[in-house]
Image (cartoon, rainbow, N blue to C red):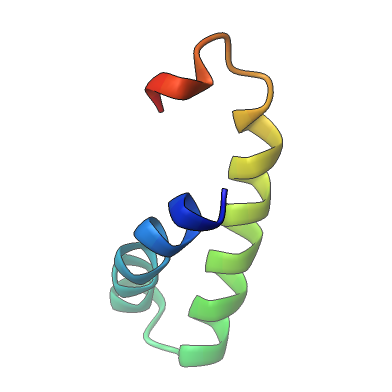
Length: 50
């Protein structure tokens, strides 16, 4: 999970920041998005393919 988080955090932050143009808001959105991703990841039938 840590490796996956590190892999996507930077790209997700860059994407979100371009939309909201506020550093703290972008960080909050990325954090919430990653929390939701990890919740759903455990429910996937083939999580290893993610």
